Length: 177
Image 1 (cartoon, rainbow, N blue to C red):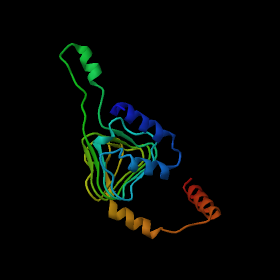
Image 2: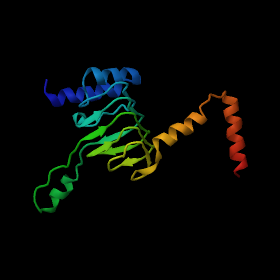
Image 3: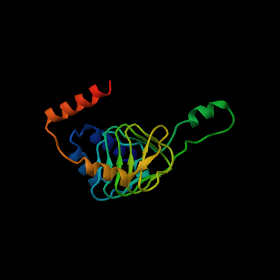
Image 4: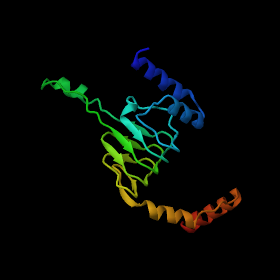
């Protein structure tokens, strides 16, 4: 079977696996990405067109609807200008240890996300993310440190029954208006 056809079948199969644990096992078993470390969690059901350009290290969590863009197609428009032949730009993406990528984020090519980093939901990562940082925004920029976030979560690390959560929510929202 040709590599392109095999790749497309893998992409289809992954999209159809509804359970994220089963999807992770499939991704690891079939060596979909260039490499995947231990304790890898990948929730998206869409695999990028060139997954071999993406490396994951240990303890990485990729939440739903994260998009990895490892090439562009702007050459199609540039070629219409009649100024020469343009090719698509492509590059690698590397996600180091202990990284959390929030839902609906976009990670562009030629980016390394440093260890102990958090990418906030909806961020667009256009350049390297420094180690021990929290980034957010479009384009993503550093808004804090990983260590500060962990310490903040430790201070508020408790479970509440649903009724208490709603009570606290309503108090907070009503006091703010």
